[in-house]
Length: 271
Image (cartoon, rainbow, N blue to C red):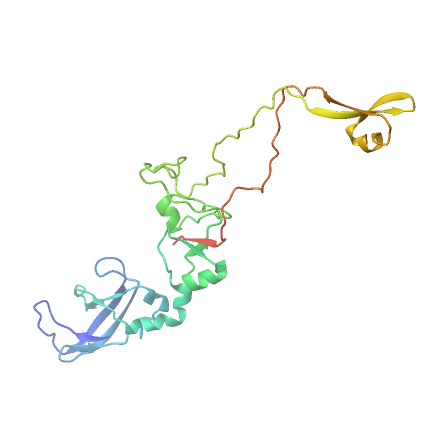
């Protein structure tokens, strides 16, 4: 880190040795430093130079976030404004970036074809499967929402929350419905129409031929046999009426009602 040091009036500080405390912050003002070190620094013509981390080692994970450097000379107040670090220092974290960077914000939900181990490696350990697991007390998602366990999204479709309720796209929910609440499967109420057959009868044709000298009525299925006789009579009879009755409809189909779909892993950012 190299820069110039001036006093409150904008005048260059005198040449000499100064005890300088360096601090890193994730905010331009306020907040608590995430790292600091103090070192005696030589100032010449207001210019100073110091290798950050030469006293207290730096952690690569610091550089995942945007950082601001604060300087304090001797026992004076910290110089303002803080200096925002530019691109070069962030190269320090390149080797670990893929495993430590969290690619989302608390409460974000993502679909992915990557399994949990692969997804965490690419997006950060702040992402977990939405599998109904218990949330730790220090989990940011729990602190923000009061949830003690994750929703279990296994095998479920994701549906948008009702907003004004005016569209009634989800008539069983309102804007006040709990987020990530499971809604059981259902089929919209409807009816099937079956006509009542009523009392009726069916016609049947019979033939009479002679068996020896005895005439006998032969059912239609035996007409071929009856036609072998020399004498044949035909009559039409009504069978016994069926009476008033209904017909039952058998159930068909699979084990659930669903549309064509693709299955993905569903993850949620908890920290």
